[in-house]
Image (cartoon, rainbow, N blue to C red; front, side):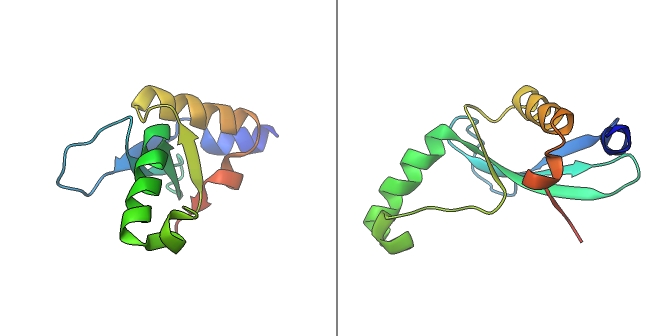
Length: 108
């Protein structure tokens, strides 16, 4: 258990936001890259609750995802708002619960 937590001690993370539109922390989904102190990189998608309603409505109109019947993102973590504070609190909690590798996937 200590070895697991030590692996993630002093981690860093960054938002991988590639869109040219302004970032709305309550209505977006963004890839978060977590880097361990030994340089290993992990990835998960943080999705704000507001994005879910938006995407279902959009997909009903465009016909995507069986005309709005479903929506999925691999490695998705749903949050109220995407902020550095929320992401850090989530990562810290997942580390403490030994679940970081359940939700974040290693980047090869």
